[in-house]
Amino acid sequence: MMPPRPLTHRQRQAQETKDRVIAAARALMAANGWTATTIDSIATEAGVAAQTIYAAFGNKRALLEGMRQTMMRDSKIPELMAQATAEPDASRRLGLWAQLVRQQMETSYDVISIHRQAAASDPNVAADYRKVLDSRARTLAGFIHGLRTDLAPGMDESTASDLLWCFSNEEIYRELVGERGWSADRYEHWLGATLVAQLITASTGPV
Image 1 (spheres, one colour):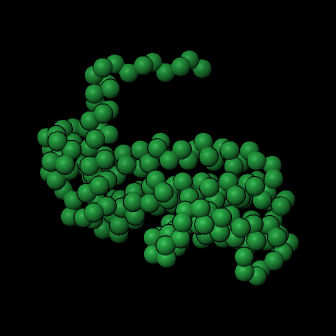
Image 2: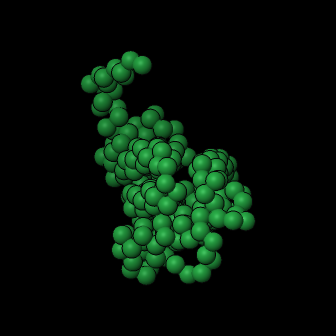
């Protein structure tokens, strides 16, 4: 595969403008909410004309997708997923999953929260969000399928996928780290240990 061609100066400028607009939208929506954040306010925050945003993105819905793509790029989730799925030891694989979730929450909790909030008020965003959730479900099911020979006795893949979904939920992170003051290290250790206990050992007691 040939390496991608380097961006031209104009293309770099356009990408830098898009990144600035996305950063402004992300900050304003996290602070003020999806509904209250307007294209005009984003333009002011980003230091561009509103028409520039319309030309680059079209609407707030497209801005949200831009935020999600930036989140995936900056959080290194694809790289961490590849590392986790390549790990042959089940316990270490779940530990790497816990590291992945921590990384995603530390870098991207605000975007996840904005997306959920927007989906509650905009039917078109809700349809987009449903696709994101369905894709996530397939990813989790594939991850669990790779662990199928290590699952605890009586644990089927569907239940294991549901538990992985539940314990990886962003609200658990918010409650433990944001509300209860846990460190990110403590959260990651707890998540990894909990997944091992729930999915690949026979113990159902507390971790």
